Length: 197
Length: 197
Image (cartoon, rainbow over all chains, first blue to last red; front, side, top):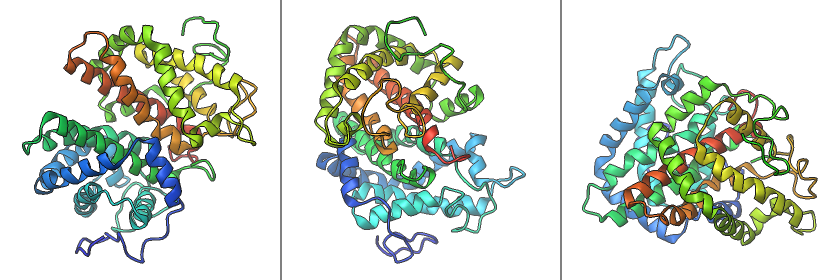
């Protein structure tokens, strides 16, 4: 929510519309996910460890997407050519997303920005608009949801590279699974039929 | 897919329509989830450990749902009264679901039944029909997705109760996270706008 020079990063600004999900609904969702104060503390500890490693983490994640044509398709045009500018623009916001997730401030501004991120994955929302990209008009929801596993699994070695005990690494990893699942659930809202979310 | 006397358990029968998801799409989804042969083996090992503990596992899961009014609502009528017959009928299929997940036979019959399970959670599908229940007409998708965490977290102590090493328990737990996520993604299909899954 601080000012950055990252194009398209509008967290905390008037450019972000209000989320259709209320803070009360968010609280029930957190309870369902067993996401509590211990997890928020673990996420914040993880932020200190991960901040200096963000570029390496993004290398791993982009390597995974690049190695899977069905995922790279989200960044590619009708001829299957990846849009390198689009990939680079998303990468900067993705790096920032790591830090924002680790800050664990799940307040109204954060909630609103999750809905904005969801819209940017969909054809009815804003996919490609933010970056003027020539690419597929949506990311299929099934892949948005499935990425929970590669995102959090590949994070684990980075969480372990800072002298934390195995139990602390487990706690940080578990907190990341909850925090990423919470977000992809919120991102699913624009995909879901009216009233079914 | 074997014959059982569980009412409404139609896995492998002609009563189950074909899934709109193809086996090829399922394979790409498994790849995205990093779900491989090691996970299938770990699931099968888990089945031997979990089979004698299924009733205790269901006690924990039903305890969690019962303690959370926003989840119990799926089993309750307009006056908020839980339908005990409905809870009991779902419980028998839920126990069977543990064994079916651990069998890890992700073939056409399994895929078809996942779509059937998804439909049974939705208002456009078959919620309440199978059991003639008087209850809420759908389970909100956000709770279907969020239950990944309590389901797999509460399973861990049961996985540890059979002499498996800590590494084996971790492997079985990770495989369960992937297998449950795979299923709730498939269950989300009827909730999602046409073409967005």
